[in-house]
Image (cartoon, rainbow, N blue to C red; front, side, top):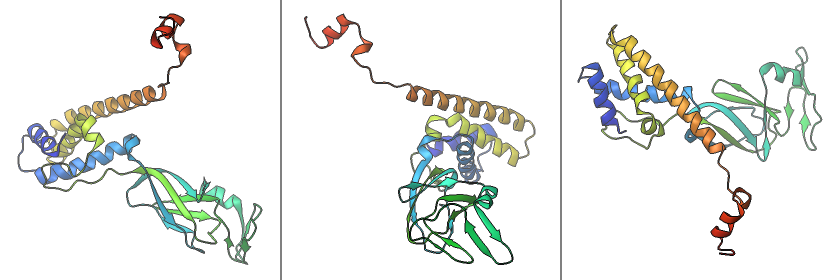
Length: 240
């Protein structure tokens, strides 16, 4: 569904024609909210970055939404919690010494204050990741993650890019936008109605997506064992 149609439907539900700019913003808000409620496969993306020797902390992409998988070169890094990272190192607070518990690879170095080696682990810190050990050289980081839907510019009548969510789940978007509009207008009568409609549309969206995922997983190429002998002969014109 194109933006002008979404905007028009929302105007009808709100019975207002003076909120187009705000409606455009609400459309973006709802698309992001729906992406947070379900991991759409079309939003699973990949990007790369390079490490810097001696630098352990790196920013995540600006469109990062969640579920990071991180590779360093050809090695998949293990995600750990801050507590697990503490268990991987023994820190002498007085001396400032940090000791890696796992055997160091050939060529890795240990100083009195840090460890420099090819990374094995990472932890997430908001919109940053910290690698351990600290990279000792330049490596290619490959990040796989769910990204935010591309933001649409306000004021245009058409979409800035193809959008799966508004194409296949327009009702969820419309009810979500209408709900935000009713809340903005303090319309106590419409808020509960739109909230219930949005909740129902989201549940239907998730059910449909899960059903599609199951269907995809159940796809199997048929072999000759799936057919009886007569059908098999007819298909390949054997003995016919």
